[in-house]
Length: 450
Image 1: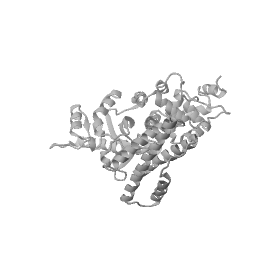
Image 2: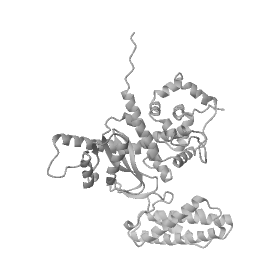
Image 3: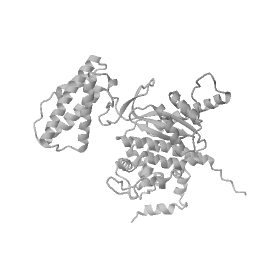
Image 4: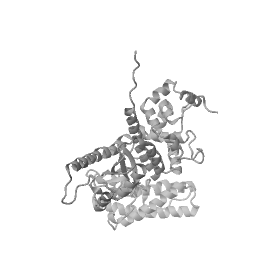
């Protein structure tokens, strides 16, 4: 049997309820009306069943919670607490709680992200939303593109911090714990002496290169001994009292040991796929060359924009050259919209290969002119306008995502889950833009004559 409040929500949907009337005329209601919920629900299984399926929400409700998470820019716990007390959020997700009920499971958002991650891809969700919103796009022939990096929430990585974090996990969280549970004698090690030295190293305001190199060598030797001792305990008791995630973490630590041993005798530039975080081993250093932040640690995203509507071309934790994505981006734009006749991008895209491709497809760009012929007056005005739009609107949306949609530091763990956070933040910003645009285009109601 459904709850009385759940039945009442369908009675209120006829428009006579004041609460529903206020909701429909608010920005929340307009955002809800701009999202194709039925098509989105088709991306997930018809029945919300199976391992890990959240019991509180159906497919529409789960997507609604993901949009709210990005739009409100709050933590998972704060979102659940606000959902329990705010009827507008409940109407947005189509789940009106009874007066005597509330959600007490604060890990609900983790389950929702895991369920969406297992049953659909981010490209599928984006395609559904773009096909629904493309009718609201006016200047669909103008394509703007740029790349940015959405950083992951990790401490600033150094070799000494990473090695010590691995040593702590091997000795304190595994080796000493297993010896206590299995009632065996601890193997001899220099862990306590190295812990004292590590505290002395951390307390110093500045450490010389020789001190840092000496600390790295000591920690590499300690970590190698610790892994050998832990492996002996695991072989002796056949891996008892260890979880699957512990084995995955141990594999990561072994990779870190190999890489750090390599770095003792080689340059950092010679090492590929360098691991910088123990708990987020998929994160890679991305050299951006910015003056205030030359290296960023997170996901590089190539973003496309049409009439203020942003959509993602590629997301990767490994660095890539965005200028090679120009042809693919034009093809992706053509699959959704009619085609590209004007293109805006910064100077890194202005390679000879991209220039020939744009000229061959009659695409006007804002690239600097090559050769003896200059732009005409009309071409200069058009090129300047495209460059201005790219520099203000396209680059401005990156700051909006980071400041207002929770992408300043992405705190969730998991490669696919971080991509979902970027996707729903981008789509939530699009939904707000579409809702405001539709609200401006609606004619004002006429007053009745007296």
